[in-house]
Image 1 (spheres, helix red, strand yellow):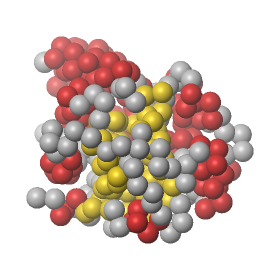
Image 2 (spheres, rainbow, N blue to C red; image 1 turned 45 degrees about the vertical axis):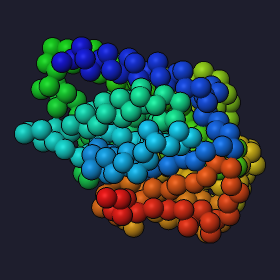
Image 3 (tube, rainbow, N blue to C red; image 1 turned 60 degrees about the vertical axis):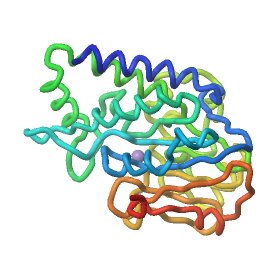
Image 4 (cartoon, rainbow, N blue to C red; image 1 turned 90 degrees about the horizontal axis):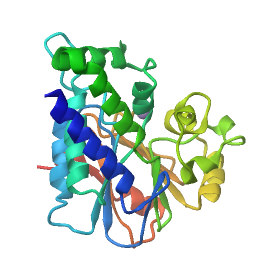
Length: 282
Ligand SMILES: [Mn+2]
C-alpha cells in the first residue's frame, strides 16, 4: 500500500516539474482557453468532487484548473487522525492525468508539512494529527511516505501568471515585508531555506492583510493588474477590496471558485461576476 502511494506521488512530482507552462516557479498561461481557480480545500472531498465535475477537463481541452492547500482537514480515522493525504493522492492522480492543465501551487500548510513545523486549524496541530493517521495506515514505511509527500509538495510551483494580467498565488507578502522581498524566487530554483521564516516563499504563503497600496506595488513588480488569492478564511466563500484583489475560499459549504477566460480583459466588477458558488454545482 505504501509502495503504490509513493509511486503515485513520484509520478506527481515528475508531472509538477514537467508542466509545459512552467517557467522556474511560475506557471505562465497564454491568452487562450479558460481557467477554473479554487481556494483552500483542506481535505474537503465533496467540494473537490464538485470542482472536478464543474471543470469537466476531459470535454474542455483548453481549460486549466488551479488547486491549492489540499491537506489538513476533512475526514478523520477512528482515532481522530487527519486523512487529508488521501485527497492529496487524488489530486496527484488528476495532475498526472492532465499534466499541463491541472496546476497545484504551494501553500503554507504545505511548507509547514515539509519543515514539520506546527500549524493550527480549529485548535488542533494538523501535522501531528496527519502524521499519526499516516503511521496507523503505513506502519513501518511511514518515513518513505512522509518523504514522498514532502518532495511532492516542494515540487509545486509558487504562482500562476495569466497573460491577461491576473496573478494567482496562495497569498502574498504582508505590507511591511515587501520592501526587502526577494522577487528572484519566481525565476530560479527553489531552496528549502526559501520556505523557512523569514524568507520569501515563507512570506508568500503565510502573508496576510495586504493593503491596496502594497498590492499596487506588487502588481507593478510582478507585471499584473489583479490578484486572486486563497489562504485567508472567508465565511461567505470570497471577498474583494473592490479594486485589485479577490480572495476565494473553497473549504466549506459556502465555498466559491472563480472561472475566467484567459483571452478576456477584466475589471474588478467582471472578475467578481465570475465567482461560482460550489453549492450550485450538481
Ligand atoms: Mn493557507
